[in-house]
Length: 351
Image (tube, rainbow, N blue to C red; front, side, top):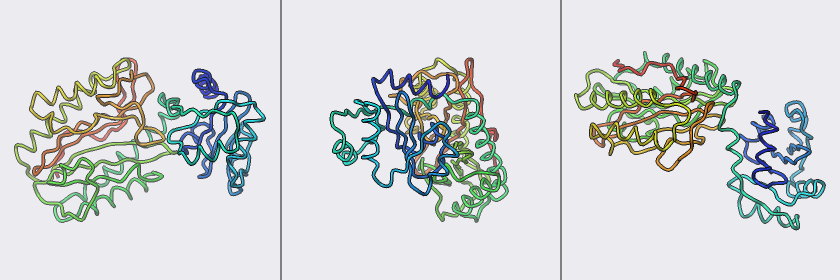
């Protein structure tokens, strides 16, 4: 289905006459305009891109099929004129739509209703072109990590390893980092979001690396845990069971599964080894133009997974005073299984 048809169906199903788009990721997804000042006003018979004078010429080149308007800092008034022109009575807006924004728009629009709508949902199923971009972002992150491995040794700091990893991804073609890179070693491995510090790497540490690259606006997400020298039996046990959990979930994941059920199965797997209480976050999430998208593999998300969706699979075990292990892949959902996009080996790695 063409994107325009999907948006039209979304408007029809939501009972909307128009949609006002202000989220950068959705503006880019719909229009392919890359400027930082962008708003869309989509009606049943015309599509408008509103920007400021810095970007009008760029928008005309990039946003094919859109009428480009310079809003000149008077966005509510411009939208009001367009709403009147197209006899719009009900406008869909994205969340969050602040109260101050509501007051600004309603002050210049009489008898127009605003309805918060989940426009992000049209991005859940990726096109083949999107999947290629995500796969390339995954390749970049794989290569960046591969080039980082020789630098992992006692005496370097988490921050130094972060710098090597991020610069390696940039040199491989990344447009930036997907999120603040996590490098959590030793006892800090028990911090699921332990971003890099000046802590020095020591022999016997497990180091969790969680990182991602960006390619043409699309993100990757991968986590690998590396052992420095000899580790304890408890650390090895943690690693083996988390790896087993990843492999178990990836072996059953496919279209038709329910997100919450998959999360539950991961917890039941770890429960067999009395590790479930140390798994303190969702099993995974979708990735795309944003690093965290829906659906989420979590207890409260009952979405049915569909062909073309992306998900991360990232079970982790975090024991205070001991450390942590997380292993994560980015995958695409297929009819009878998955395709794993992050290729760096998950097997135990000691440096």
